[in-house]
Image (cartoon, rainbow, N blue to C red; front, side, top):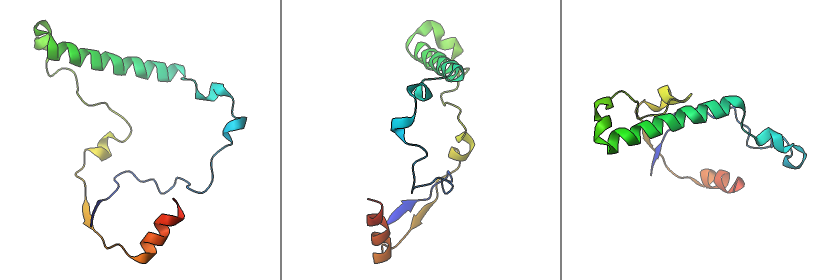
Length: 101
């Protein structure tokens, strides 16, 4: 079997316990902040610009000025080539997998 090694380290994330009880969290915790609104607006401007450049001839002169990739905190890591590894499936691996499903 083949697998792709994770590029983003998630070992510090807990798989055992939730961070909080959802029933006790106020709904306001899930509303977007002003920073979230600003980030979304920037993303929409980027997407709209790409659509205009791609589909309207008058905007072709701007081709190459707008990045087609969204920048996020894992951008640098995701630029790296994936590492494909071979592994053998053993009974201990199967037992570990069934423990969490």
